[in-house]
Image 1 (cartoon, rainbow, N blue to C red):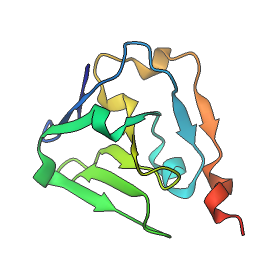
Image 2: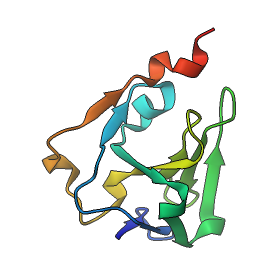
Image 3: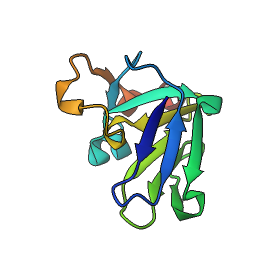
Image 4: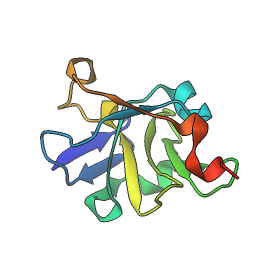
Length: 120
C-alpha cells in the first residue's frame, strides 16, 4: 500500500500497489507532454481517495472520456482515468514520497499522440 499526496497535502489517496511498480510510463499526448508526469496504473478498486475529494478539480478535453484530476489548491496532477480503459486509474508516481522518480530505471513511453481511439 502506498500513500499519494498532492504538494499542499489537501489530497491523499491510498494505492494498493507493490513496492516494485509493474509498469511506469510517460506519455507523449498533448496533456501528458505538458504536465511531464511519470505515471503508473492500477485497477480503479486499488485507488481510493481518503482525504480531500472535494478539493479535486476535473479536466476533460477532446472526447471527454478521459478524466484528469488536479488539486484545486496547489494544481498538482494526482491521477486520471484513461479513455482507452476508464476502469483503470493512472496516478502520478511523483506524488508518492517513498518513490524516488529519479532512480527509476525503466520508464516506457506511451504513444498517446497516436492514440488508437483517434484512428478512423
